[in-house]
Length: 218
Image (cartoon, rainbow, N blue to C red; front, side, top):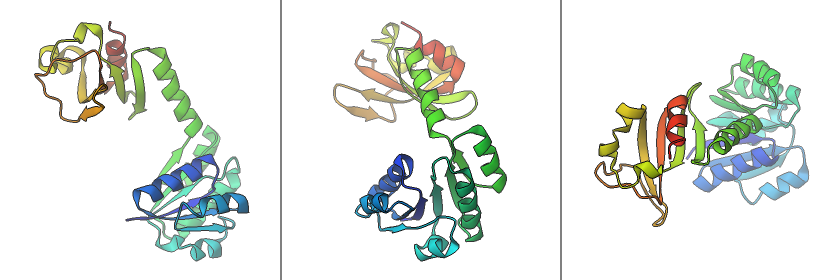
């Protein structure tokens, strides 16, 4: 179990706090809005009303002993930067900051945080990739030109096995898992000799251009 401090309980911060708590981690949440704090009080270990830039408040909710902090203070760039600085001064090893623009990200990155998160941009990129191909179901960017995608099995692949298809050699992609949708069963180590069904989906990894070509197959 790790200890996390979440500053800012808007949609993003509250979702992160609830998710971490449901996994079993120790979560302390902080927000200036008493109503938001009251809503989260039943979903985390500690919830308090306060200012994330105030070192005494952060100490009071246990930030000094936290393994990581998530800062989500909306479009208040100054507040997020100051909170990140205070977290760093308190010795928090990992600091994740939600940003609202590229300029916001540039400023926060100069502080030396672990990662900046731009949820709206990331969601937009995923949606753009997904709706560009009717075969693409999910999309996770792993690098500048490398991603993990879930795609429907092209009709030309149905009845063939992964060994028959030789996807790494022919298409430059690798199948990480096969999802049998009808049985709702995921096979993380797919049988290379099992014939693919039209009800299967494939979790595949590779360069974006190779994945796009595979997803466009019929």
